[in-house]
Image (cartoon, rainbow over all chains, first blue to last red; front, top):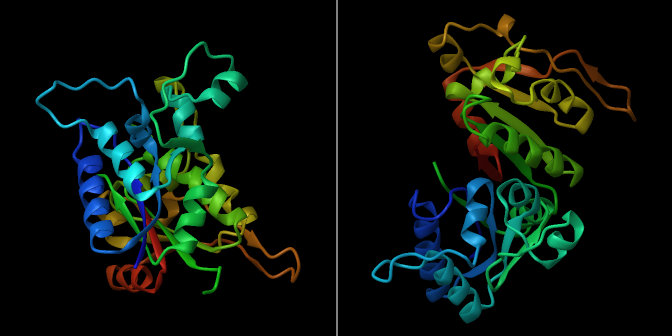
Length: 130
Length: 135
């Protein structure tokens, strides 16, 4: 089955991103396909490489990056939600005159059309959040 | 596979207090631009999103409620409101905004696409949807 995943909550505060990660990983290990993971609302905060959790805790951002590396996942952060919450890549820094970037490896910033496309192209859109 | 799906946006939260309602509306506008069959469902505190006369001056937030009244222009064809959720909050259809819809090509028009439905119909409508976006 072809899944797309939507993550609506930030890391650590809420279990949504952990659950989405576990679900995605399990689905991929079972041979399913993941068309895209889309981060929306506070979910965009999963896409900052500046996250520094304690060493004895899981690193949620790195988990996503590593999973994307292994399975060539498409991790997309919503641009409008990212701008509100300060998630910045080179393009956004240039366009909005910011002096830094913080996007994590394997994440990219793009528009809501990517979520709609994912819903059209996938057999199931699975949403994680409240 | 057909590229046109029945999209249902399930709105469950009050318009202010969290950003879910506002960012849900942003997805609705994009989905309509992708020429999908877009419907909205309002349940629980989500019914407050459609109430008339919202005034946000006291909380310093943008009042985005007028946007709902334009959804007919974005080819949103159905906006359903759960009757039980309305009643539980002491609201009736008269407390809600009206949303006009018109097909520019056929000139077919509907005065108000906001429709109050009972719980069985809510379940049916969700079942009939290809994709449910839950906010």
